[in-house]
Image 1 (cartoon, rainbow, N blue to C red):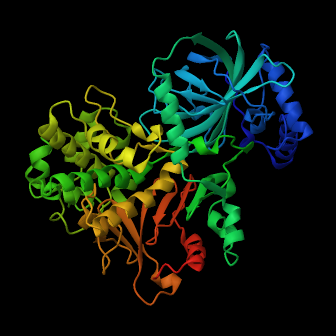
Image 2: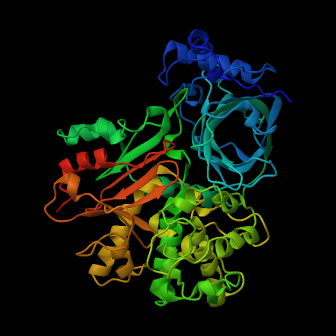
Image 3: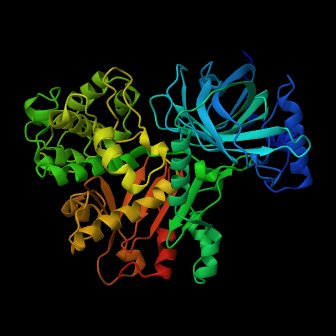
Length: 590
């Protein structure tokens, strides 16, 4: 196997300068627009796809964009695709890790396969959620792709598709694209793939290479339903505009500050957006041009799942079973049979006030090396052993906020046993409560219909991290929450228990939630809240609820239904400058 490592960081300044120049000359095109260089890039790629030659450096992502506006009216493809990477033509260039720390197969893609249906210009994979593999390092997700005719050869078509590598047992996502050629008879070229961006704080790398395509034509019995579902999904996406257009509508704001460029560098920002009347979106920057499938860019939840999974599950269950917040951990988690857990409730776990900890700093245990025992564990038995027994009781439950993902995992375990007791032994807290009851109402994409689980027969959902989203999924959250509050205020039947929802969203006359070590931060029902009245100049104390994820992810919910979010691997969690700009549009204090 030939996997090449490009160690740019180990060369001196002068050599590095020439390496950058040489690297620029090797790229197939320099921009995502249809320039002459871009056309040459496309033509060179088409020639290379039928050859056995390796491509020795990443290309501009423009090669994955259609070079023609010609439409396809007939649907002539449906069946099964299997993509097998060629180990001798697979390359990886680590950026913030050392070559010696890369596993022997870490630079090689797993085999990627899926059933699909072509509907005019769109390739619709039937499996769009997380797909588990036998690869030692990677699982994957495949998104909606494109097909278009080649200008020179009308009977030949190019397919380009977004895909993501997802780290085994973790939430890191490396986003890429792949392309290959196919004709009416189903004959295919090789495929080329490239990954030039990620949302992963501790592992940045470029991947690229070639492999074999195997296409098996077959009839998909559910084709009509799949196409109708696809049409509904696209129609229900919130209409997008480029975020720069906010300036046209609101002349006083500085759109550049919405990118948080004062604290997050461009290469560390995956994307950001504002939800107002429209969904104002940023471009999706990569190390080699703009990502060509920004609507399909897969985003990791990390700890925003503490709100979206654990928080929403509790709010939904509380609507049906009002006592759920007061249920005892020891009644639903047999592994937590120690006396120290007797007084701890599910509400305590949701609010991170179990009273069990080693460090009395808010995130001292979460940041400590011993937390890797939990995060690296693959089975439920390993995770629950840490969650129940590693952290001793230091004070009564409900008194001190100490952040533990293991507490949220305990909560998810308790809810699993609880829902099985109510609905039968095959019930699942993720599928039966979230996927069945809430996801269709929110309008989530198929990507959110799967979650990370333990690698064992039990397959316990992580509950505190491990979801995957598209940017449209994030944009729909504020609309859903406001819909639930509106239903309640108009005496309609809401899906969520509204009292705790109001606490989580800071919709009471006073700040709600558990105090943290910082007087401007609180935690309530799985949601964070930040006091913004000081830097906005509000006369009345004002708090904004937000969701937060490892590495630099924030989803901020404004009281008037607007929303600001960003996804990065910067390690930065400040969105103050963006909120000050949105405050200019409409006063948040009011």
